[in-house]
Length: 247
Length: 222
Image 1 (tube, each protein chain N blue to C red):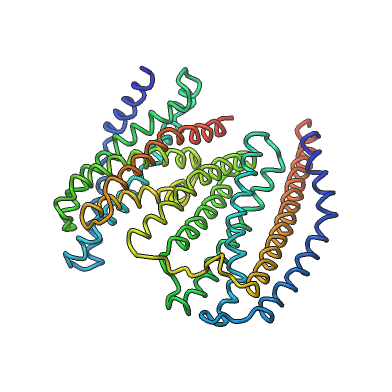
Image 2: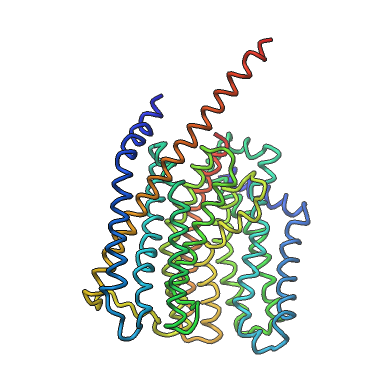
């Protein structure tokens, strides 16, 4: 039962923490959304569309943070064989994929009025798209393998390979873009943000991050419960089969 | 080291005597390139402009088709298990098999590329560079592909899954491969810079990929 010691502690801990996280998420979103719709002024160049950024930027940031979390969990699984690490990596992948997708969709919705097209083969867009494919590969690989333990370890290897290659992809896409077209069209200069835009953005970023942890924790709890149910079913079947075999 | 060499020789011999393996990849490469102008129209200027990119993308797809061959046959008849028990470290087994895959797939594909370049009206001056970059790039293709082949080994829908996993990882090779050919045709960027980075990617793949693929294989046989 040693293997179960940690998940049990996690279940107790998360049961207590989760309501607070959910409440905090709701509160932060209430403040953040109010600020981004009513406090923040429309940009003099971008107009009202600048408000898309309050969704877009936090999503993009979480898309990357989530991959980092998967990578750390994968190391935890491969090096220390921590059972919770596998649960964490499995729970994080779909959430990360959704945030990446949100970043891509909101980005292209913003791009239509700004650049006149939904999609530009800009270096940043392209590397986020590839990140999305990496997420899909991770999810697909895990779904394809029946053995749960093996699925966890093999996707951990893939996640770590992705971590090694992601910076190279990012670098090469930058290079590729500068080869073909001059200066990037991205105008969001981080340092030049006015505080009326910056504060809503920061609140939204924190809100999204707390939302991510709430979702991730809930998904981890579900995964642990699912595994316990599966284990219970197996012991039930075992018990049901044993007397028959004896006869 | 003799075990390493004989494993490479064995895999090459198997691929050659199997016959179909190399021919299929080459045939696929040819048909993709031949069908492209039918879709794009016979404008030779357009074809010349997109030729390096098209040749590289089609090369990646053709190589992808044969990736599962690296481990699959030996996995199915059990010889992979014997190799793992044997004296040669698993990482070297992966390296030997990847090199054999490169020699039987990457090299033929790279060598036939200029012929297909003729079909696409590729600048004659770029032929040498094309073959050179492809020879270097396919080395990385085989080694990175070995990771995917090991991860998806023995899974039913291996082929499609393998493509989904591996193609994003080929992006750097594609970009710098096409980049160095383009540098020769249109300039103005330097050929040496792209080519050096392509070499670096392939070398890094040779060193690192066997570890990842080896770890994946070890987990399969636990």
